[in-house]
Amino acid sequence: MTTRDDAYDLIGVGFGPSNLALAVRLAQSDAAGLLRTTYLERQPEFGWHRGMLLDDSRMQISFLKDLAMLRDPTSRFTFVNYLFEQGRLQDFVNLKQFYPTRIEFHDYLRWVARGFDDLVGYGEDVTSIEPVFDTRDRRVVTHVRVRSLDAAGRVRERAARALSIGIGGAPAVPAPFASLAARRDPALVHSSAYLSSIGALIGDGSARRRVAVIGGGQSAAEVFVDLTRRFPNVDATLIMRGPALRPADDSPFVNEIFNPSFTDVIYAQPDDRRRATLETFRSTNYSVVDRPLIESIYELFYMQRVRADVRHRLIANASIDSAGRIETNARESGIELHVRAGEGAQRCVERFDAVVLATGYRRDGHLALLEGLTDALGVSPARCDVTRDYRLQTGGHFQPHIYLQGCCEDTHGLSDTLLSVLACRADEIAASLLQRAPQPPRADAIRAQAHNGASDSLAAVAL
Ligand SMILES: Cc1cc2nc3c(=O)[nH]c(=O)nc-3n(C[C@H](O)[C@H](O)[C@H](O)COP(=O)(O)OP(=O)(O)OC[C@H]3O[C@@H](n4cnc5c(N)ncnc54)[C@H](O)[C@@H]3O)c2cc1C
Ligand SMILES: NC(=O)c1ccc[n+]([C@@H]2O[C@H](COP(=O)([O-])OP(=O)(O)OC[C@H]3O[C@@H](n4cnc5c(N)ncnc54)[C@H](OP(=O)(O)O)[C@@H]3O)[C@@H](O)[C@H]2O)c1
Image 1: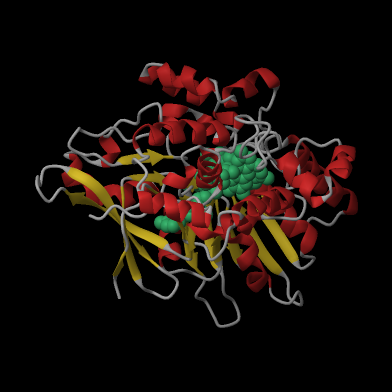
Image 2: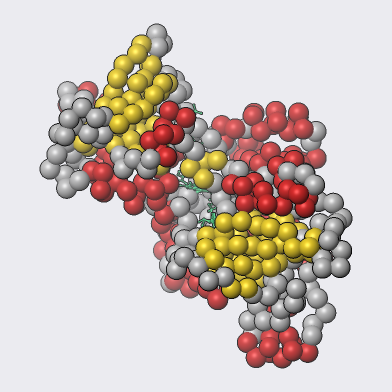
């Protein structure tokens, strides 16, 4: 059944930290009660990379870069206030720790998200976005229509004057694994689904299991260490393209590129200079590992030699030519990798019971969602510029504002996919939105607002 709601001032697509930060910012604005907003999230409840919520995994930025602190240290939505309200602030201080566990930060984000439950449609997967034309002038687009599939399989449609797309990344699957992934091979898993899948792949622990981890970044290192620590029946092999695990550069001068104020600097650079800047600082974030984790992996290999018990391996300088299912007989199953490795690029065949792709994320999911706007925009969304306030630049005939979060690295810098700028980016988007969004309050809206005290009480504008 298709239902049709009235127009929203803002629909957030995805409810991860990006749109959560925006919800927080809007809740703290004077216009909060005048905006009709909703956020659509495909997960059944709030979750921040749950598939990688490993016990000893830590944050990669300071807890001070939470959803609100850098914009407004007095906000009740800060991590410090969360600690205070949980009764842990004093004990947290005793930890002398800037980098809480991801489990604790996840709990903080969930604590904030709970305050917005009435604004979020959990279990709703946004499938397409289309233009809504002015009935009097078919050249003018006044709204966008957001189509989603809810948990019960119903298609829902909502119209909005503005969108904030914050859908994060999608698993990147290297070409040799594409057909196994397309067939949903049960022995192949991406790191984003590691925790929910690994148990079934490892079994009850009675049989030895060979597991390969592909990649040389933080996810690969964390998965590899988890396999070696938690599963005594696993022989783990880390297979990476590069020659060595390399540390993330988080030294203070370099770290300035993650200051919210640096966004102005990088955005203002000419394209070629900006590309060079991104390349120079790539090793702050991608294909790099926290130094203590590298050291613990090195020690693990060293201790294997001391014990003369070499079970876990690292294959560096490796390229994978192909990957296929082992079909030999009923007793042997799994995935076979054709690998070229070492300085001489020797060919070898490796067999595994399971393969974990820790091969990072693609950031182009918004383009597929926005494809349905191409004719109305007059150009593919991929070719539209993005303004400093994160808005897709459109012609005057296209009135809805479409804000992009987490997919503007090319224009807004390496902090765009991270938590570093969340609070300030939300401020900039909110300012841009509020410049045009609040409609003069109508009598019924004011009555509803007084009655509900909620931020989504403005009666809808009919289409
Ligand atoms: C394991 C891991 C750990 C990380 N740790 C850190 C860290 O410590 N510090 C840091 O700065 N960065 C970290 N990052 C980077 C990460 O991108 C940010 O922390 C943060 O998650 C970005 O928030 P987001 O809301 O933009 O994206 P996400 O957190 O990915 O949230 C996007 C949301 O959109 C939803 N969604 C996607 N498509 C749709 C759709 N079509 N319809 C409805 N909902 C949809 C998803 O379910 C998800 O909930 C980490 C990344 C990973 C993978
Ligand atoms: N504790 C935490 O806070 C935590 C945990 C995990 C992840 N993260 C964050 O999440 C983000 C992503 O990290 P990530 O480790 O998932 O991804 P990543 O840094 O992008 O690393 C991906 C790895 O996969 C390899 N790879 C990609 N394509 C490949 C191919 N075709 N064949 C072989 N190898 C391939 C890359 O190799 P090359 O190096 O050769 O390109 C790289 O080593 C980062 O911001 C990271 O900091 C944070």
